[in-house]
Length: 269
Image: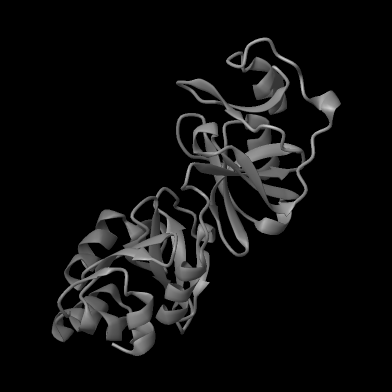
């Protein structure tokens, strides 16, 4: 395995090498010529799993599982031209896009059957690993990331160099972006970052309340912030996004099973 591949996968749990004959037989049955760097990696480690970079997670499937898993997900039936080889350990597969003569690597939601939802991740296996190294998630350390698009607020599931994976339960916002149904009244879609006029991360009060503006300017005038008598009365907060309680600014997050507030202190939005 070359130095770059070793560096990029040093956090992952590696496996014993794949057997070349099995890898070749798998490629023939899947009707694909595996990229050279992927073959090099598999001949050093037959699949792998673990963190890659500061925020990403990667599962590379062993050669013996590739055919069965592609059949299980009915890849050839619903998205011919893709060959799955791994996942992010959650709702997205990583696949070779063999529609062109030189396969590229894409990310594809397991729940989708629309090939246009494939998101480019690199032309080579090394580029793909570099891409995951640079991917940035704002979902840990008690923070949540949001963006504003045409006046609507969306939760950001993933934030990358050029794209946002946004989620909302607001049907009007869903119609605006022509989003797909995710689950239980939630809607989701990958969109270009340039579509958002503001992106920001919020931390809960218990984690040290605060706001980090990642793009644009987040500004709410005093007239737009209602004063409420009870911080757990989130009707106003849900409608406006913010409220004032006992002289402090609050942002309310009203979930399906709970209502609670984040104390954002004297931060100027």
